[in-house]
Image (cartoon, rainbow, N blue to C red; front, side, top):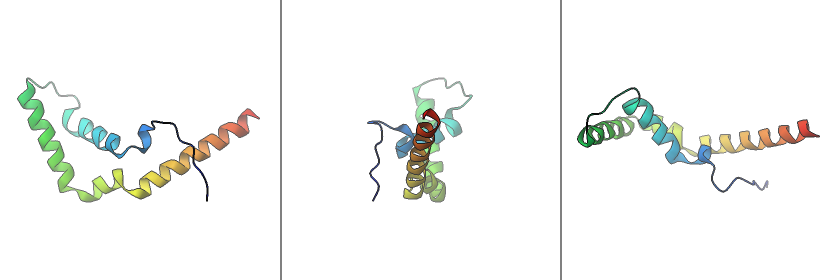
Length: 85
């Protein structure tokens, strides 16, 4: 068993951050939204699009992604220690 020491907040390991980035990129990027109603509609459309593609959502939030990112963080930390020595 390997004990992982992660920072108190690690956005790369927070599934909500990946969903937020997908919503921003798909529904809000390069758009000038006129009012709050337009923002709400864009958000609803983005959420429906994510709901319609469960495999995409699973890729962003599933355990395989979280484990992979944790292992990458460990590898980077190890390489940083080796380079510093």
